[in-house]
Amino acid sequence: MFSTIIAFLAMLNPFALFLYLSPLMKELEHKTFLKVLAKASIISLVICLIFFFIGTFLFESILQIHFESFRIFGGIIIFSFAYLFIVKGQKAFITLKTDLDDLASEIALPFMVGAGTISLSILINEKLSAKD
Image (tube, rainbow, N blue to C red):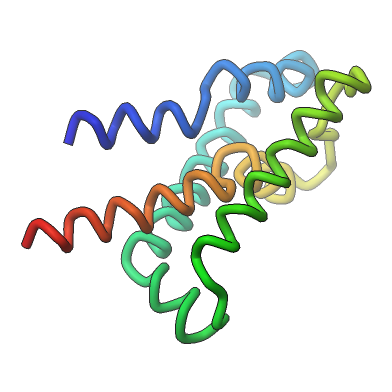
């Protein structure tokens, strides 16, 4: 159980998330920022739980995608974000919008829940199912 928590913290990468959200923290009031961050966290939790419970079924039966190809695609997405952020000196990936619900979903996807955390949710379910 402890290793699962550590794995999720590593995938969430709070240090990188802080860098992504720092321009937003400067523009929003503290209370508003916390409200947006809470909504983004709830969105992320729901997505992780959905993929934990039905992720394998969703990929194999409905989407007919091999799980490994999704993991490769996720690696390409993460590489592209890293390239933009580091090499091109991208200032901010998240832009301030008038609707805070849109802002919460923009934070949740792909910064809090991306291909890595979705993959990890599915793999944890498979690991726990194998123990039973």
